[in-house]
Length: 159
Image (cartoon, rainbow, N blue to C red; front, side):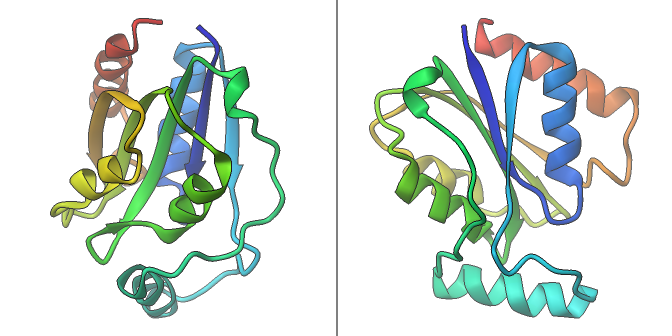
């Protein structure tokens, strides 16, 4: 099964998960970057990202290469911002043409996941969500527990 992991990672949490999936499975990684990607202070990130999330803005992305027809399974990973999946994934989903695909989802958060997973799933109607999970601060507590959770989760992919 040809698989792609498409993710956005501002602080490295979602990147850690994506790279661990790559270590377990033969997948293509596609990292998304906003055109406005730059270093910001913690408060700057909160205002920038949280404001976009609450206002439901779709930031412009840097160019990337992705053809959904080339994949049997698409894994999408994104952080939670202000109770929403981070807006760069909105931009990606609205332009990528993902429909009729098997999709797995993961969210990374600092403890405030709320209803963001349900919101993420709703963004992908017309697809089969085969697995979904969340990770709390995986980059702050990397190790065997996080690796085991990822390993157990990818078994649901049937790859």
